[in-house]
Image 1 (tube, rainbow, N blue to C red):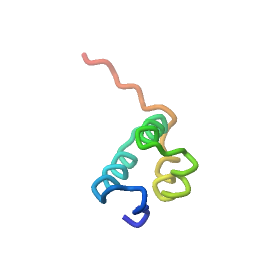
Image 2: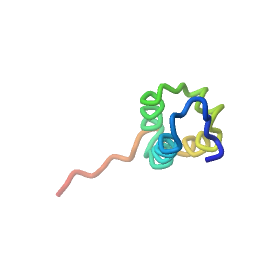
Image 3: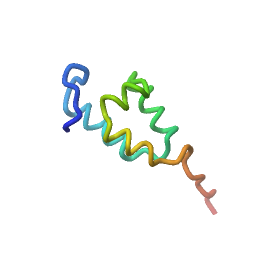
Image 4: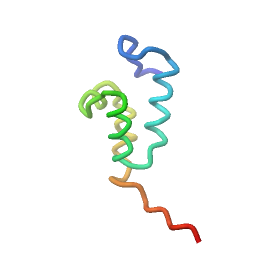
Length: 70
C-alpha cells in the first residue's frame, strides 16, 4: 500500500484492514466510525490517505435504507 505510514501502523495487515474497511464502507457516516475506531481525525485521514479520502467523498452521507424483510 503506497499510503502506509510505517511509524503509525503496527503491521501491513492492520493497514490493509483499514484500507478494506474504507473501500467497503457504505456511507460517510460509516467512514467516520472507522476513523474514530482508529483514532484518526478527518484532517489526518485526508492528509495521510488522499486516495482513500477521494473514495470516501463519493459515498452518500447515510447508507441507503434497507427494505424490511417480507
